[in-house]
Image (cartoon, rainbow, N blue to C red; front, side):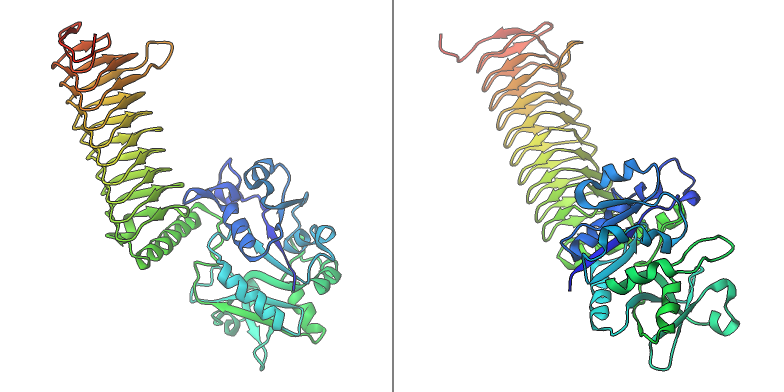
Length: 450
């Protein structure tokens, strides 16, 4: 059977008390709506229909080509919202799955179960229900003697016996498409809000003698809807623990899952250890047998095997195999530690490469620099890369030795095996094998051929 999907995203989200639309609030590095769209795309090859309200250009920009956008100009309830998708989807599928953009933890596995149950159902719809002791205002599910859903009773009008029911309506449905589109405009107007609700379709189906099925989950985090920042924090914690558990089961040691944040697109190799207070963000990829943290932030970085990162911040950088950094190091955009390179405490690298086996022990800054293999960068070394108008390059050759507190005024080249004395201010190129010392630095000796 062909499946189409509808995601409701037109709500104003006023309880978030924010200038940012609710479905654009970030959760573990992604906007809420992205989770709903990705989950739907995992179920069906067709683009989901995303129901948006007025002034939602930012939502369309974020989602891009991953969804078809339909506007719900007036917010008149969930039934009215789905009605707006009829012209787009009618005749395009056998089943229609309806979810919400503010339910980021709903899994493709659960929705697949919902679709499978409806494929087997002789009636027109299957709904997702939740069994929990914390109802949070959800409607209660009343079943008939055969186990079919008889009706949904809203909390405000439920009897004491109905309030004791632990099975709740999660608001997610899979419909027979033909039945849905022929009934969606028959939903009665509900007072006092003057809105049209999808829940009334259950009563309509039962009234026709049709069977309404349900798939039940006991994981309340899956159907957590984000309406406030309190809910957003709850979802963040639930998703963090879900991701951490997945990595631990895949062979990654996470010392303290409660204080470790790993965003959804991060990849980690087997036998890597993640220490507390570590945040792995964006498209970061970490190899096997690494030690990361504690107190570390890594964003959009590529890290090889057997690397160590201690109490440092890395952004859009690369660490090759067997390299290490920290504590209190900073790799900025374009930084690269080649194989076996060492960068110690309070060092900073920006748009620079530290060659294979090179060492930059402590208290140094290299910007726009290329450092050769096995070179040594003494404490306090600085590349003076900005002349007030443009950034300039520094090149340091293989096996070079840069003395402590050396200022390298770019553009400049220090040759292979060259040395600088402590406290030197180097303003001219230093030939291979030569020694530069003093302020300004003078050059003594060279192995360059005349």
